[in-house]
Length: 434
Image (tube, rainbow, N blue to C red; front, side, top):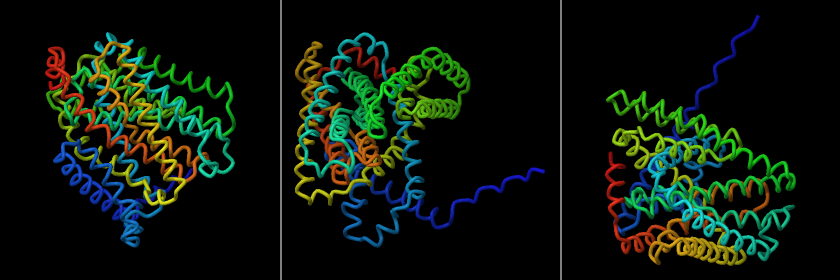
C-alpha cells in the first residue's frame, strides 16, 4: 500500500519576516536613490545598483555589522528567495525589451549590427585575455590554469548587459530610436557569443577543453534558433491572437509572462542562460505582429517600478568594495577597468564607423554597449564557484560591471542629443506606444 508523501513544510516565520524586510528595505532604498539619480539627469538604474552596494558588505556591514548580519544573513536558502524575485524581474524586463526590437530594421541593417557586435566583442576579449596573462599569480584561483583564468577575464569584459542596457534605453525613451535598436540587437549578439564562451570556459575549468563540450554548446544554440523559428513563432502568434480576443489587458499580460518564462526555462534546460530564452521570446513576440503593446502597460509598470529595481539592488548587494584596500586588487581593478572601457568603446565605435555611421552615432553605440551590468556579475560568480577567480579578482570583475553600467547613461545621453530624430523613428515611437 502506497502512502501519500507528507506535504512540504511552509517557509518558517523568521525566514519569511527577513525576506519581507529585505524586499521592503531594498525596494525602498532603490526607489529613493533611483529618484535621486533622475534628479541628476541619470536613469534610475544607476541609483538602484548603488542601493545594493550601500546595503551590502561595502558599507552597511562595516557601520552596522550586527544589523547587516540579521537583515542579510549569509544563508543560501534566504538569498535564494530574494534571487528568485529578482530573476523573474530581469527575465520579464529582457522579454519586454525584445518585444520592442524592430526586426525589419534589424534585418535591413544586419551588416552594420554584425560589424558593431564583432568590434565590441573581439577587441575587449583580446585585451582581457592579455591582461589575464600578466596579472599577478595571487589573483588566480588555487589550482586554476592561467590560460583558463585569462579567458575568464576576457569574457568578463567583452560581454554587454542586456538587462541594464534595456532599462537605460526604456527609461531614456530611446528604444524607438535607431541607436536604441542597433544597441539592443548588437548587445544580443554579443551576449549570445559571451554565453557560449562562458560555457567553454566553465568546461575547461571543470574538466579541460574538449571538442565535445564546444560542439554541445554550439549545438544548443543552433537548436534554440531552429525551435524558435519552426515551433516558437507559430505558438507565440497563436497564443497572442487568442489573448487579443479579450478586451481585458490581464489576459495579454498573463500570456506574455507565460511565454517569456517558458522560453527562459527552455534555454536553461539546454544549459544556456535563461535570459537568452527571454530575449528570443521577446523577438518572437515582435515578429508575430499581433501584439497590442498598449495592453502591456500594467506589466511594464510593475516590472520597471518593482521587479527590475529589486533585481539591480540585489546584484549590487553582492559587491564588496573593502577588498580594494589590497594594493594588488586595486591595481588589477584599475588595469582591467581601463582595458574594458577602451576595448568596448573603441571596438563598437570602429565597427559603427566602418558601417557608415557618423561620429556621434558611433560614440552612442560605444556608450550603450559599454555597460556590463549583471552579465559581468554572472561571469564573476561562475568563475568564483569554479575556483578560477579569487575573492579579490571577483571584486575586480564586479567593479568593472558596476562602473561601466554607471558610465553608460550620461555618455549615451550626451551623444544622442547630437543625433537628429528621423521620420521612421517617430513612426516607430507611435507603434511602440500602442
